[in-house]
Image 1: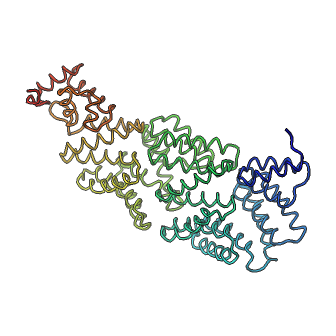
Image 2 (image 1 turned 135 degrees about the horizontal axis):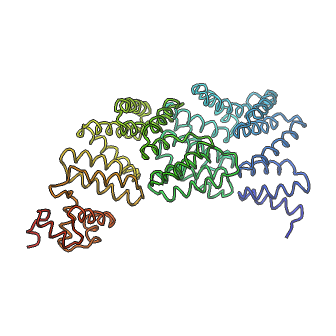
Image 3 (image 1 turned 45 degrees about the vertical axis):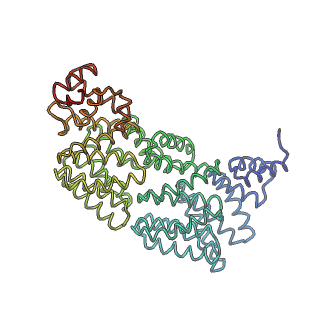
Length: 553
């Protein structure tokens, strides 16, 4: 049933009030086609379009508002609409148009009172500019000035936008505790629903991105959950939903929910298609590439990394790690070396250094790995966060293992494992358990080595981490923990329980292993002993002494 013009405008306003942003845009446009919207309705159309990622509609509406305000010589409102028109154009890559609109906004702001909040908003593009050039102190000073203007004018949007930018810049400088002060204030304003919808989404995304950038993953997980709740209340906030899904995918991957992480990254890519959120689209492709690489789906992973690069995000370090897994070592080294040499700031270095250490160690360049370990330690000390200290620990421990310094490797590996276990990052825990197992085996502690290998194997199986599972099986096959009969300590333990009549499921329950792991142990026992049945395996085990004959009377 078609609506008359009055019903259409009422329906548009109602859709806006309940946060049905895309519906509101459609209804406002229908109403506008019948009769030109008034100022308030045109304003609502602008923000509904902005939050639902309809940039052209938003910009057209802002230009119309600007024309109205400037014709009436309303300099404050002219400055406001010109500012948003300029900022949005800049953020979607229309730098020339954006700069022109910002200059217009500045001219109008000059005609306003000295404490007009629009003067504060016009400082924000300068904050972005100085941040982009790496002039962080100048950016912080400008953000402080914007916050002061916002506080004096009681403008929560300005305070939150400037505060989230300032906090992120302080993070980049390693001043983490200091950065949380403006970030926490911005988050309180957002959670208290004191911000306009568009600014609320911008602030949430800026804060979560800042935390992920410096591996502040505890806060990133907490605030991603808050952002998720906000997106659920605003299902038509298309751009912000897509960005949120990318962050959520990163957190899900870390928590070991790989299937959910991949689905989130797929939804993000689908939802952002056709928008100007190119970085978020590229990050979604990169995240899909990461998960596929960890699963061992190398061709598909390669395609996603390439897509990320084509859209505009450097696919390192993931692509270099993929090349390493494919045995293409020269390409792995070249890729990670180039990325490290061109890294623009410390957060980017933090993302690259662990992979660089792993690649150089795997390729036998221990001196290069040692230099990167030193860089990682320096950054960890400067930032002063536990997570970076544990990442640095892992790098030094890997280097110690490569140099045969097995005793030196165990304490930092144990610290890192404890941290990630408490966080709830099973894949990282499993990788650390493998290295602890290697060290224990070399130190002659075969029982501890088998325990670590079993725990890691269970995790890799549950995650579907095929390359890591293959690696641990290779390690166990050549482990120094094997006895004269070539069975590992764990395999002898399983064989003894087989001799007691235990089924694979019963053995799994008793040893706290997964049934798949026990199945694999039994298969390995058969292969090593050259038998094809459980009875023959027990007989051979008794013959070779793998099983104590006294167990069977």
